[in-house]
Image (cartoon, rainbow, N blue to C red):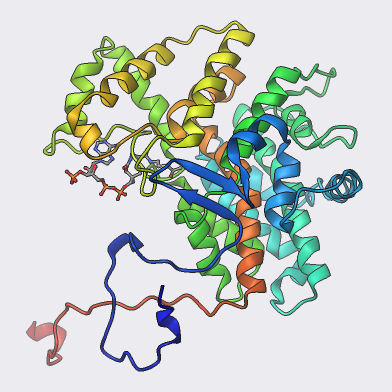
Length: 402
Ligand code: ACO
């Protein structure tokens, strides 16, 4: 590969690649992805193995620091995080100000950006590694608190503060589903399911949101604002917002009588803007390995929780039909990570508009790792070029004469 950023004499020569389909923006040692073979590895470890054997916090450490932690490193990591789980009480004033039915992703992006106002030490791009690390820890620690506060506010319920006795995922579940009046029992099946889902979402190399985090961070912008920009990028239905869009689509198909063939045809119709949500991927031209794990987890969890969700049957029928349909086969459109995840979130008790927020919770360590790597590599500011196609020369005419 040629590193064209090093070639200084290309004046007038610009590679035009809409959507960066074939443009590498960086060198990275975090996540390996082979879209043709359907392989995904974090720092060299296959996603299948991590999803089965690891915890989300361990994977966060792996992504951010490069290796799986030894027991004492993990304990220390957990202890540092536990110290920072509370958010400043004034942050709650922002939360109070949002309309109660506003989308949680809008609240999340704003609240995460607002963290930078409380931690001015994060604003100096030349601060010590120790300071930078502390800001990363704070962000990891406060994120689940913010996410669960957003949820509680949407219900009008009192906020549940973090408790030091819990691990990362259990603490999040307690803040989300717990009550002030009594302790709830945290189901280990749910904890395992959440760990699996969060691990599967933890990083995915230079996707839209990670590239946004790196791009914003490349101007030496602080980590809170950079991640807030990543949250905004994730929100769109072509990226993380697809998990919400999938459930909404499956519900529509159910209400429409469950005629999957009709909806497959709708997705194939080029005069219809409808797309089969949760299908297709920019890089995977084979089964998304995360979707395979999620599909199995979905079956297991629904069975363990004794839930029978009719949309799961519709999802399976759609998948089956698509896998043998020439339109989907020729374009290599397979279910992606978002296709089954929403069904699990729903079974766990999350409302639909929280799904993309859960994706963000999982993706956070990836964004942090990408931001850190970009800084450590001292990458130049991101600044793509363009091909100008506008007017060339126009003469100014006063408003009254136009
Ligand atoms: N339903 C119907 N047709 C589709 C779909 C779909 N879900 N996805 C792609 N296609 C078709 C396109 O119409 C196009 O057909 P054409 O060659 O006849 O014009 C062809 O497949 C290639 O699609 P592109 O849009 O060029 O592929 P691109 O890489 O730009 O887009 C994307 C990838 C955005 C994921 C797309 O597949 C899509 O919109 N999927 C639905 C939304 C979704 O599930 N997003 C989540 C992605 S995973 C994630 O971000 C976490």
